[in-house]
Amino acid sequence: MPFDISFPAHFHGIISTISILDVIDITIVAAIIYKIYEMLQETRAITLLKGVIVLLVVAVVCNTLNLHVISWLLQKAISVLVVALPIVFQPELRRALEHLGKGKILGRSVFLDDTEAQNVVDELVKTAKSLSATKTGALIVIEREMKLNDISATGVHIDGLIKSEFLLNVFIPNTPLHDGAAVIRGNRLIAAACLLPLTENHDLSTELGTRHRAAIGISEQCDALVLVVSEETGTISIAENGRIMRHLDSETLRAALKPAFVSPQSNFFLKLRGKDNEQG
Image (cartoon, rainbow, N blue to C red; front, side):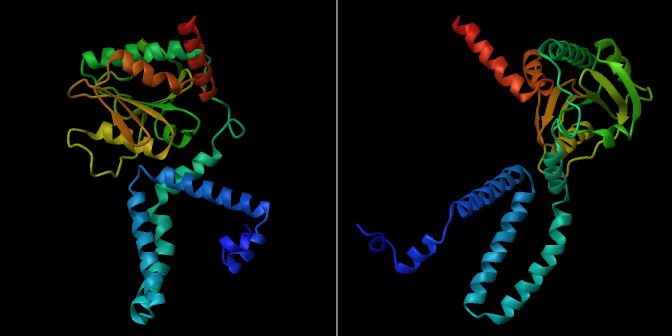
C-alpha cells in the first residue's frame, strides 16, 4: 500500500524531511523534559508548573479566538513570569544544577567498601538507639555525592572517626555542639552545630518540630540522608528527598542507612551476591 494513501501529502512531506539526527534531537529533549518533571514531581514547584502550563494554553486559545484584551493581559503576565519563575523555582534549580555537578569526576568519592560501610552503620545505629533511650535530640546529615561544604562551614569543624561514644559526646545536652546538625562524610564526622534550612512545606504534621523540618529542608536541596532523633519522644526518623520516615527500629534504620555509604554499583552487586547465596 503506498505511503501517501495512509497520510495526507503534507504529512508525508514533513516526515520525509526528518533525519536520524532529528530523531536523536527529539529523544534527548524528551528525556530532559521527563527528567525535569521527575525532579519537580515531589515538590511544590510541580503545582506552579501546572499553573504556568494552563496559563500558556489559555493564552493560545485567546489568541486563536482573537480575544485581544485578554491576550494582551496574558502576554504581560507571561513576561512577568519569565522574570519571576527563576526566583520561585530557586531551590529546584539549585538542586538540578547540583545533580549536574555531582559525580566522581568533579570530586573525591565518599563511598566506602562494604566492610567499612557496615562498621559505620553499626556505630550510627548504636548511637541512635542510645540517644532514643535517653530522649536526647540529635540531627545527623550524611553527605553523599553532593558536597555539603556550605553547610559544614556554618558549624564547628571536626575531623573525627565515626564511633558511637564520640557521637554521643557531641550530642550531650546543654553543650556547645548539641544544638544544630552534625555532618558526616564517609567514615568521619567533619562538622557539628551546623545550621540547616527549614522546609517550606506547610502540609507537614504539626507533630514535627524544628529538627525534623530542618532534616526535610536539607534533604529537599541535596541528596543527603538525614538521621533524626526526637527530643520529645525519642522517635528515630530518616529524611531523604524531601520525605521523612518515622518510628524506625534498629533493622529498618540499618537498611535505610547502608545505601548512603556504598555506591549504587556496589549496592547492585551486593544484591546479586545475596540472591546467589540464597539460591546456593
